[in-house]
Length: 234
Image (cartoon, rainbow, N blue to C red; front, side, top):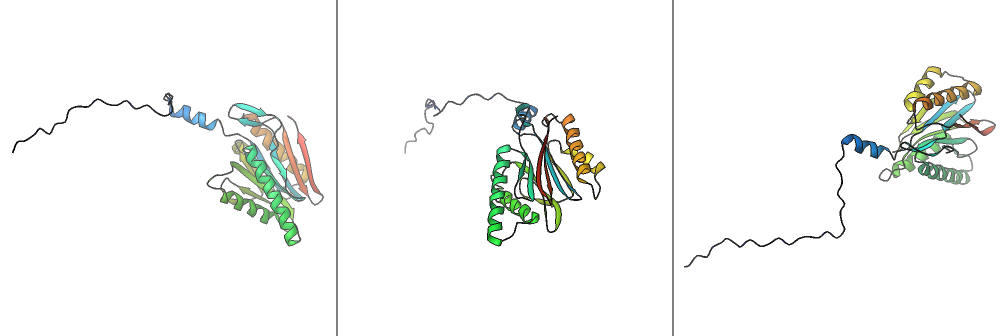
């Protein structure tokens, strides 16, 4: 039987045209990539503290995206009920949505049960909301504080809903500086004026070293008389 050669002729390659033109991406060093990714994470310095007669929540007013200052009058502290407030650090839109949802759920709880929601329950409610959003998270660190039948209390939550009770706390890009001032100056039984001055000093210290924080402080002071909102410009 006659044998035929098994070598096929070389066929010319058919050029493939992409459906959409792909621009060439310049190679970047890992440092530049990290810097560009970090540029969209806003900074903040947000503080909460328990004092003798209640809770103070405070945050500076600057809203930044990397090195760009978007606003010098951003608000990062929110009233939820007549005795509970939240203070946040992160994306402002996520803060606002989270605070509004918490306010709505607290009102529904009050109408359903017939009594105001406790600070612990409100913090746990927010933790559940954040945990349920863990696959599409709300980019915000949150401090929940308030006054109820059990007294003044404070809770710290991260992006995934971890719930940590504490007497004082700081979150945001200025945390390292602010928490040092709080630890040095905090003691049990602080008066309202002493607590307010300590919070102000901790945020001012963070502002002097953190370029993403600045332009003043918003205070949310929660006592038995209700909630008082104050603002100070630097």
